[in-house]
Length: 360
Ligand code: GN1
Ligand code: MG
Image (tube, rainbow, N blue to C red; front, side, top):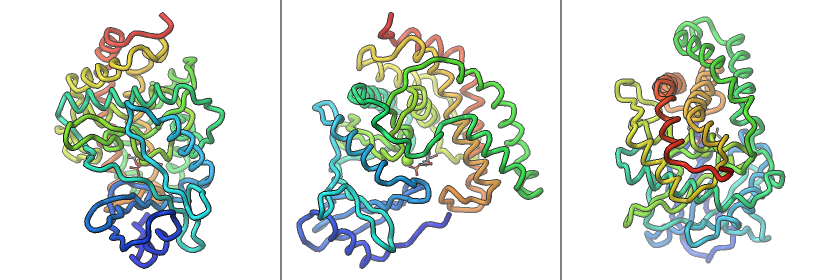
């Protein structure tokens, strides 16, 4: 999907729909993310807010999505976690629905913060683990049934495999040929992962997109502050958030790295991440801990199969910067999946050594 352009006039009109002091605001596009359109809102050179257009075709239930975030933000207010605030609209609601320009929200900007796409630093990996643990502990009291599924079956392997098989039926012969290697790997790995569906695990409210660049760090102290991008916050299993984080932390290369020799499964970064989780004390069940290594295989694989499906479907879901970006992302995500499979036994020993279950 192409990136949407929004004029400054329109963005300023939208800003006026929110409860902020009237002033001259400057807007700057943040070209990150594959789904929403995001803008930094500054006054006299100082950033105050983040204005974001919610992609309605990806998230059909915007009211449910914003209710989820509103509820979660309340639970995430704590000394151990930097809270983000939703700026209310003129009627006190959490978003603005503009008749031609769609759904928008305004959030507070966390000053002097930064996010990393990748890292080679063990202390960043540890901090990422610590804050994801804190996030889950704070949301532990949430009742999963109070939250809507913003994207039903988001991390459901059967659902994603179904979409993949449908795409195989409609894709051009040329695309099927170009993606031959990826299609083979997808079919082979799907069989190995079905085991995950037979394990009984507690349902939690998960972030469901815990890639490293969805974690804000303090520029000054390099401590992790909070998680951003809560659109996919909904019911899930802990290994989703674990696997999504590890795929962007143990791999020191970007998600669409084309030179696969740069794609790593870095054991020291993995260990540091688990150490960070453990700093929160025990909060996972024995079964959840056992499932974590498979989560590290599942998550890059799921993202890979989704990217492959979108490539076959002619890029109807993700915003792509160039024609084959989805295929490049898929191949790189599958390469990491294969590397994670090779480290399954090692990961298992590591998590069992470092994490204490709550039910032991
Ligand atoms: C999408 O747009 P962004 O980067 O927040 C996707 C995630 C993927 C991510 C990168 C709703 O998120 O699942 O992790 O791209 N979000 C949705 O692969 O599909
Ligand atoms: Mg996201």
